[in-house]
Length: 296
Image (cartoon, rainbow, N blue to C red; front, top):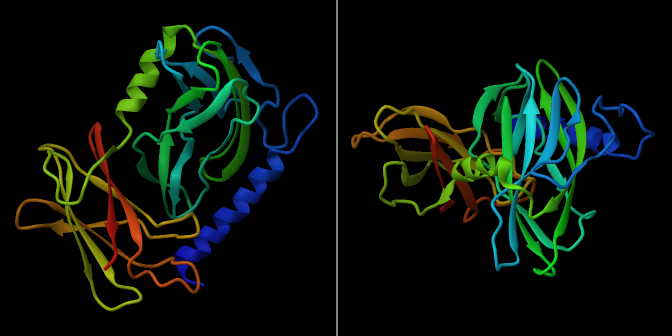
């Protein structure tokens, strides 16, 4: 196996541990160390569920009057030194898993991902969050004339020196009071904005170039960023079975853009990467953009 595939295999082992941690347990601390009780509320937020390392709750966002859509957020609080993962975790780790099947009067619940950062986690470089993260959730009610009860079962991993699978459960009646709405709005502002390669803007992916021979060419990405910021770049394959390396800074372009490079590695066995669409997320300061690029 190549190195990205080995790292993803380790992540799959952690995912299996998450599945075990999510199994029903008796009342009291779960095998993962997080509280097994659910946090329920009908005000602006549910109760916290978790332990000293991490805890999770639901918070209410700004209601959408006259529409079937409501706003909420899934908040994870982390102790100093602990981190959790983005939807694409990097060299190791697993992304959070959200289960809304226990909700009532909810037709759909869509989670959005605020811009992450990279960090060392003992198994390489990972992508995720520290301190606190709120995942905005757009909730579509089946019957817009009635309140909805949003219930989330969340399985995720946290890392300090070692990675630990944890779980949390929370329930919140929507629309909720607006005391926590600012936190949901701030997190929504951190969600990468969809853009096109070559688009104008202070933060933009100006170009994507594929150099070298297949099946493992090198991809070079030019990122324009606002003055005084240091951009970062993350690359995702078309599916979770891809394990692309983290792009690394490789210099500056003649137009002042920052150049990042990564090898097309960690491709699923038997898959030809030519023509595949990858997602590139550029982050600089409080801004983030997301583009799709074809490897050709």
